[in-house]
Image 1 (cartoon, helix red, strand yellow):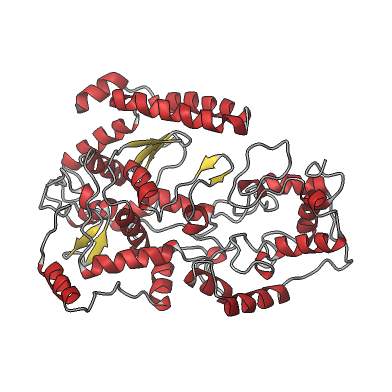
Image 2 (cartoon, rainbow over the protein chains, first blue to last red):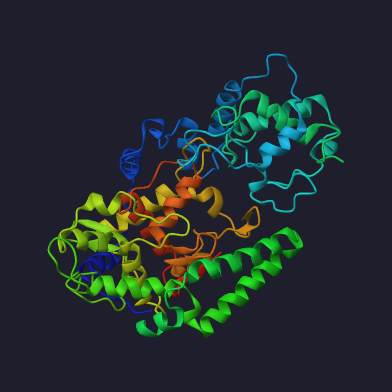
Length: 206
Length: 286
């Protein structure tokens, strides 16, 4: 490695020798927000504001998704309160429709307007789910035999709904999209995804 | 060398032929299942090895040649070539310039990557209107890379075999790196994604596609130097600006403006992490 002594480098070296290091430039939230907004100049109205962050994303980004205990509790509390439940109290939809939306990555990309069909959840991008589907990602945990492993317990079915609706309620700064809270999927679609994971006759559990 | 590539490939649409052949080979392997993932990787590795032995078999070289011609041709309202464009090592110096980019350019008062700098030169030297060059800056599937991208591909190829050695020590450059790191980790959009959602851990994949851990110097060095690269799945050369644009598309964000400060900051950050990695542009990607 060659060391190139520019005036700046010489000054920093001198500063380091004197015990005062040159700190990395601080990027304020304002600075980052202005930059990202300019990066999407010309965005059509229906995409405007997507670069904005709510409080949860702000702190998750700041702590690189590892929030300290107190902040994690605040996130969990806030995100749990944001969950809307099925009016009839039934969490299980149709696993066949659940499988279809788990396969589909369609929706909300700038090329998906006007929408030709309902958005998918793209679950297989990150999770192993049904045994027959071998093309699955590994960013999230395997969900193979998920219902069976949870004994198909009613509390586990409700927890699965909550997890898909808003993953941060149980796991603050989860990498998983908040499918319900962000209105990516409807309540009925989430019930279908729950059925894929939790129904006894779903290929996930057979 | 430029003539050689053209003689080999002529005017046939080699992009589509190679793309279709590789795509079907890949599809067959993927259908065969997860156990075949390793075999797919091996097949691509084998293809890359063959490319190294016979570099002219990479269709990306057609755009390298095109880029060289575009750089040297008198074009634009002012009818001059880009041969006085300063890529950071003095007017007209192309050899090794890419290896030291992005960098701060005083005349534009900005940190710029190769594409942003070429755009700047096309506007200031040749008199092109910036909005004409940035309105639809990237090719669709099957189209060839746009002119700015072809020039950038040639410029990058003139640093092939060298190692990334960005200085990034100017205050503005250090700020760009810090800004890039911030944006890399900034979550937003309906999917709550940031770049780090997919690129902050080793050994993960989306479906069957492996994902590089880009905050890790070892993994960044292995991939950043491949761009601009010929992308088999879309049958054209994709530049780094286009790659970032495509990531934001997948992240459900709006269209990334080519040459924006954010795009240059992200590239400055990634290049800083990848410093010391070998440049092999034009690369070949899935």
